[in-house]
Structures are given as structure tokens and as C-alpha cells.
Image 1 (cartoon, rainbow, N blue to C red):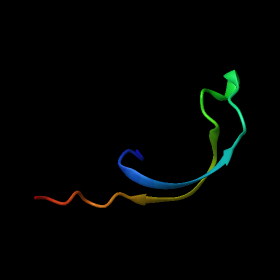
Image 2 (image 1 turned 120 degrees about the vertical axis):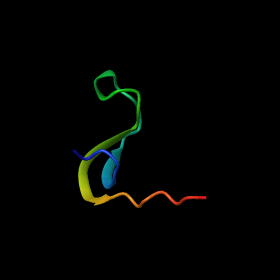
Image 3 (image 1 turned 180 degrees about the vertical axis):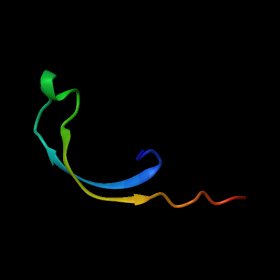
Image 4 (image 1 turned 90 degrees about the vertical axis):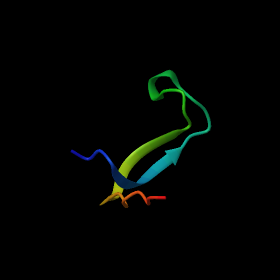
Length: 43
């Protein structure tokens, strides 16, 4: 339903990675806004 939309996200940055958080230091904790994506420009 939300495929192709643009999202503004809020995330937290951690100092290290942990197995239960995945292999990333950045964890999204909320969605700030969601908008329809701009149409692709043709050449």
C-alpha cells in the first residue's frame, strides 16, 4: 500500500552493532511524514 512513497524518518544512532539490532548502527524509531513520490522525469 505504501510502496513508492517518500518517508521522512527519525532514527537513533548507536556506538556499536548488536546481533538483535542487526548489522547497523542506525535504528529507525518513528516515521515523521509520508508523501507520494514525485513522478519520474522523462528524457
